[in-house]
Amino acid sequence: MRDRLRHAAASVAALLFCLLFCVPVASASTGSDRYAAIDAYVRDRMEATHVPGLSYAVVGPDGPLHQRSWGTDGRGGPVTAGTPFLWGSVAKPVAATGVMALVQDGRLGLDDRVVDHLPGFRFGGTAHAAEVTVRHLLDQTAGLPASATFAVADCLSADCPRPAERIGALDDVRPLGPPGTAYAYTSANYLVLAAVVEAVTGLPFAEHLRRAVLDPAGMDGAIADAASARKRDLPPGHQLLWGLPSAIADGYDDHGASYGYLGGDLNDLAAFASLQLRSGRTADGGTVLTPQSVRLMRREGELRPTGAGTGYGLGWRVGGLDAPLDGAVWHTGATFGYSAMIFLLPEQGTALVLHQNLHGLLHDGAVMQAGFGAARLLAGGDPPAAPSASPYHLAVWGTTVLALALTAAAVRSAFLLRRPSLASPPRRAAVAAAWILAGALPWIVAVPLVVQMGPGHLWNWFPDISTALCAGAVAGAATAALRLVRAVRGASGRQAFRTTGGDGAS
Image (cartoon, rainbow, N blue to C red; front, side, top):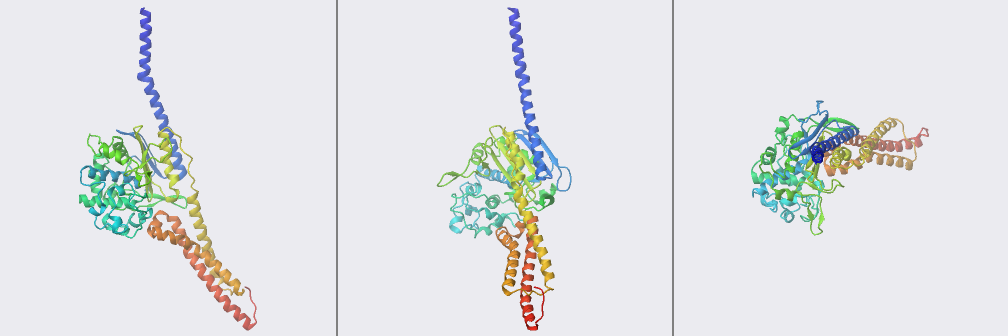
């Protein structure tokens, strides 16, 4: 009997040992292996996309669980967890959190009409503007088209107007439909929100955001205006110039914190993710968001009257990703030279944040894949196939080859002016028309882009392509003009030839 009791006691002790030590060791090993796989994947993506510097973290409710930083910043210094980056549109869920803080305090209502706070708001005409609410701005259903971003956002001059002074540029923008019936993602919605917040609080938006969100969340190093960017000594971001990363992106919109010009270091971005994982509660037990606000923000909007989902909540992207990220609440963002992303995995109680100092619209998918793939690995899935960077290369090298060819043609056309053209009139007209058409190609490409984006935005988002288009446009115009002059001279030369009976080459 005693032996049996000893055997039973030994079995119980072994079971307890396994429960207390073996299971945690296995879990830790699993977590460690997963982090190692994410590290390897992110490093591979950095190399594939020529990203100079990157920081990322896996975050829990109490802070980072795992973090890594690699590469160099825009001044050649090593990237660390304390290196500041800009986050682009990851600013939107932060800004929406600041708006919801006012809603919770009763100072602002989600269904408040924008014109009640901004009498000068006339987007789409008086009747349309009168129906736009704060909720419509938050969930991107005010009827503003995506192109409205270029009308009001990304002001990089030293004297950028305040948000309320920019909204007049929206007066003549044609709405996509009545408010609440059409979804379109645009930073213009969040610029108008900043103007509303400033009207309600009497404070600059950046100051309200710091008091309501950044400071309570522990985002002590966050960048929200030009003064804090200078204080953090924000380095320039990188853009590709003919495939090579160049630290040329150093502009900052002093009043753009609501839609794209918010930033900070890895600890700041991780602190915001932790705040969200704690459902809006601060580390010391305070409240930034109530549970009701958290639910509202993470609920996908519906378009009346169809009931179709928008894929967007109040400042957050909701769903829209394949399993195992189908339950993720997330946002990505980019501005000139920087990109960032945040993925909340509420069911796991973890999040992934990542920012990098390279971006460009034509290789957005390739650069952003680092975050999407890492989030899938964290959620227990496999990263998808990497997107191709060929759209960027086709665009930049196509316009460059065209510019070089037209430059060579302009030089040859200038040389040929020294020789009279004695070709027949139909041939002269055909040759001149062909060269005029070739010279017009850069203009055919550039003019619609300039009309839609404006020359400043075109240069900021596509510096190498803009350079090639500019050179091509000048060379094309010169080629067309020189060929036209040659054709006219050829007509005069042929007439002289006939008159004098001389001969010459065509």
